[in-house]
Image 1 (cartoon, rainbow, N blue to C red):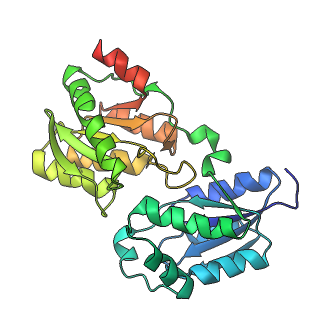
Image 2: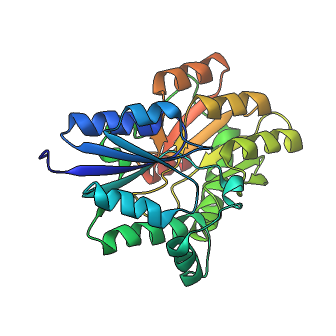
Image 3: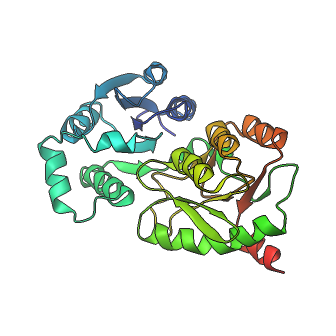
Length: 278
């Protein structure tokens, strides 16, 4: 990496954006950040060389700031509160973008924003370039392995989750005894898990996938301690998440917490599922 490269960090919530910024600087990037008042942690700004606070919808201001700072690459890191995004007040450029697309789903919107940067010669890259160690590994990650009932639910649910993902509806579904209990919408994974617990009680299985056809540079599925806390609240017994195409935050804490509550976490791949079937 050369020091002439400048990374534009579009920072959502949590600690992830700050970690990306820190690691990017270690790789020789200057880091210029943009955050959102209601989502981004204040600590994120401290990890950057320059930072701007925006409201959702200020796309023109974001691009102008990155252009002035000679940004060469852009990365998306951290979640945005989706229900709050319904109150977006778009500036001229954001309104023009929204008008140009028919579907307002997550991946479509993020792809459109990414294209706005690429039109200006700014390369959009994946956050995993800076945190490869956070990719979810393949296999059973916990002490307890999934039992036969949980394996049947994983095999039943994953094709459904992929079909929904192709329609860019959500990354997560919750099932029990090969019945679909809850499908993720705008509320996000944790709320979906809790809702499933209220509907079906203990013993549900959560499947979280990388949407087929999704842009690998943006909005990767992620799990972490908060996911496990939601599973505890709902009495969920098993979590299956795509290996290699999802992020595992605070892995030791996440796995330890799951082990304490006798849950199982599986990093799923096609070959692993073939083994389950046999």
